Image (cartoon, rainbow, N blue to C red; front, side, top):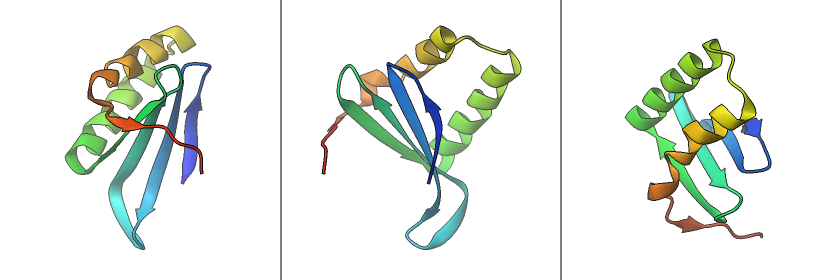
Length: 84
């Protein structure tokens, strides 16, 4: 588990070891701090997310541009964020 992005609006954590197995794409947890919601994506969705993030990084985006990209996922965030 490694935090790969943290802004005042979003946080993204990358998981490469899921249930004791190494997965090529792993998975990503995206947290919208304002909505207090999150989503976990894995498999083919994780592959697509990783590829899109790499393309975004190549354009040397601002924090606002990265947050705008991540905001595309807020519509499917159904898990409420809870502190343990």
